[in-house]
Image (cartoon, rainbow over all chains, first blue to last red; front, side):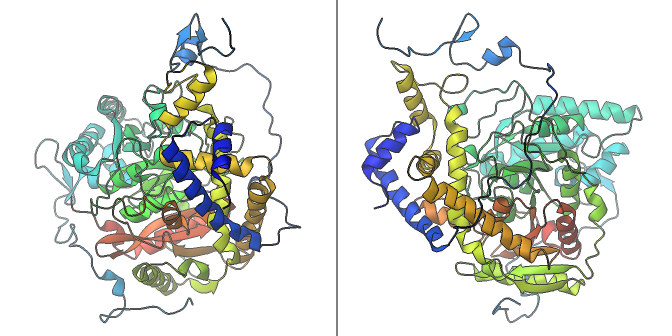
Length: 97
Length: 529
């Protein structure tokens, strides 16, 4: 087993994903299959190989620090599931009153 | 040359077997334009919605037909076949006709119009369109209406393109069959019991069925080329960085690239001319000159060196696909190119590398769907519970699987073993391509080892679905250009030929594809619906 049911539960929490019992079981099985397939990469010696994070050789592309067009408040809020006085409203974050 | 090939008793070219009757056969070119009703104009025996961009541009700009007539013809076709094909998630008939009328007015005024002006295009529903819903075929974005246009949409609008609507995809572009759409699966116009390929299945099916003249798709591991191959149309993934990703809903940012799906290579080049170019809104869009891609389409490939990577013809390939692709290699040789077998030794690691890198990037990109600022929000007592429930109810099984895989690969203790390891193998795969491109101008290979498969065939086993992309994934990993064009049929189902090029040498890819297309008739076939 590459990944236990406990691992799946831990990773789901990291990903902020609630999973049903059935989903948890299916994912444990499927992730094990997939991770076993990926063991193949272990065949390769990559000790001295640099990683490729990106195919284009570009770093630090700067733009002039000027004020440009941006979304108006109403536009930015138009898609919010809940809003109040120009702010997005969410369920309470802290315990207590 | 690659190993054994089988040819049927009728001899070369045996790949004509199993073709359906050709619709355009017996057509005569007597009347340039025939009228068979108000909206049923025909040109050379084809309805307006069956024509390509370049022909329509000539007809519209000369005033022979109007953009409104073309747009009406496309919507009539949609009314006729959409219940069967199910390519569209959203139709904008009113907006399309309004734009078409504007183009017609410009023509009437004697103004010059852009090559794409007045021509109906379908947009994959993972590109932001101002004022038009953009769902990524996910419940989590249901009802989301973007307040801005993606850069490609801005470019199309600046060219007066007529946007017909938004087309279906695998949820968040994750899939190879279009069955992962949260709404419904799209059908393959060649056989509606089969998948159109994915993830840009709606784009390819719409173009193949005549429900759009062309479409935009996005390609992270083959999502433009695979459905193009399954639906018998042309689909291109440009070099990474040629097309701005601003406003394309991010899946795997180091792999994603927008590309055209068209009926022929010339049209593909025309769309490339419009969508390519540096964009200050995307820091990964490359600052390189954009040529007129049609200037490469001279049909001349004499002396061009073509590599045939043997690993792409290995285990699991359908013999009919192998035969058609090797037949295409023969055709290219006949036209004066020099073809030779070559090797990309790390190809067998592509799938494992991709299914670490892409989910890792996706798990990070999809963290933004938390029910706070847009899209679906689940009812919950506190914030953390709201996040978790929103994501549980909003995402489908494949998206959850990839978020889990990616989160695991990036998590403490596993990062080096999975993510870093895959990044290193990515370097080895790039070096493979660098090495063969010292000897060859381009490579040809199958687009997919198989033809379109029946719905439900691979949904139970994620790995069997992932295998479908084995020939397209390496191109994304290396960031190089690739195109799929029709090169044969198996029992009436299209087979795709993939041409792969050097970075920012998309012109050569188009040149080879055009030479093949010009000397074959596969692209002229149309599905019977």
